[in-house]
Image (cartoon, rainbow over all chains, first blue to last red; front, side):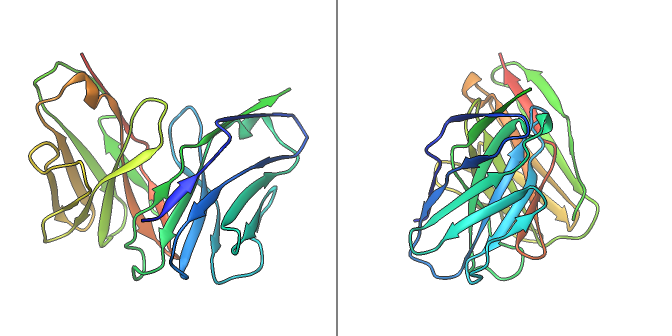
Length: 118
Length: 113
């Protein structure tokens, strides 16, 4: 069975600084997808960024980027120029590539609570 | 991306009663997923709902406790039956999108007293 581990229950960053959230996963599959979701106090789950395992290039979305180390099974999220609105719970998630199209469910880590100091 | 709505957004219920949560999507989707998020915890998959067939439940979740309906490709309901305080959680529905992403509803915050 696949597992996702987030070893940092809480992190704090100064506004405008950079922070990195860690995520490791365990799988025997070669085809899979990794995601970072953000959950603000409103509890809405918002997709931040995704990475296909077959792609070597790290995904980037504006201020958010990942460091995907497939051999090490590591998938960290870097937030640059942190903003107050980035404060939220961040969940790392895994999805098997064995399911066709949009049918696979997600396996989540326990989350990291990010605080942003003004 | 899909737009998902859930009703109710929150509710306070007495133990022993049941609550049905509705999930509406603005486009047709093959599968819908129901997750539970207990206070301060991560999301755990309850079941996968495929239109026209019985829902598939994850280990630890049973149909008698969490019956699911999926009458069409845009709608699903999850019922939390015979509630106890341990059922107090946020319940989220989710649908798959392309490519390989999942979109979530705003969640239903349930408190059982």
